Image (cartoon, rainbow, N blue to C red; front, side, top):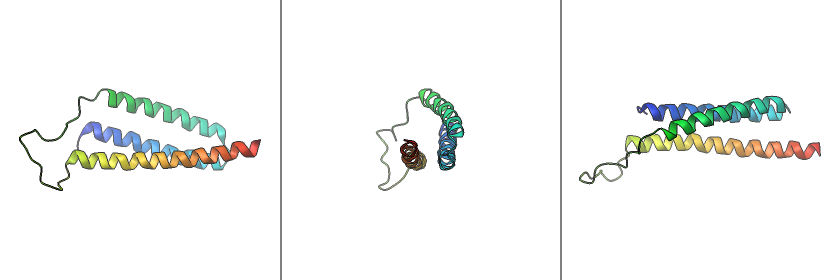
Length: 110
């Protein structure tokens, strides 16, 4: 990842993953106040990420039509996309676990 925008996206996503994990820990401790603080910080990071994505120029759609890539060759942009996708999947998985735990806590309160 040498593209500055990709690095910035990766760092924001990595921080979102850290916050998702921290959210799980505070939910396990029944600290809804801290959980709300984490959600507020996540909202700020998501806004930064949306702003970053919104300012990107049109993405490179691959090599020009007169260039043929070697079969099986993975470009840097494809590797970047795979890394970003892995972090996104981690965030989604952790958020699902947090949601399940939050629902369980809410049911226990009822």
